[in-house]
Length: 118
Image (cartoon, rainbow, N blue to C red; front, side, top):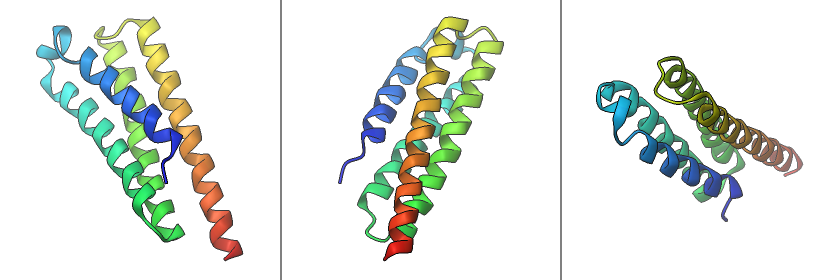
């Protein structure tokens, strides 16, 4: 089973990897690492949710994905505040992350309802 949220997450991850490849982020390797690490965690947890069979496991990994998405959003806010991202680009990234979070929430609710019916 493939979730559309995974496609959105890979797109976001690639874009953030490209944007953090040089410039300001050369002087802020910890911030770059945190952004990248949380993007990878987001992808990994969505991937794990796709592979799991039990609804409890799917929900668990989706909750972890949600935490990573919130972390990415906060890191984008920090990068914007430090001047690493202009406000237009930061706004676009924040919107993408928020959309991913909504998709994760909807999937979690779907699996929770299926679990209750089962």
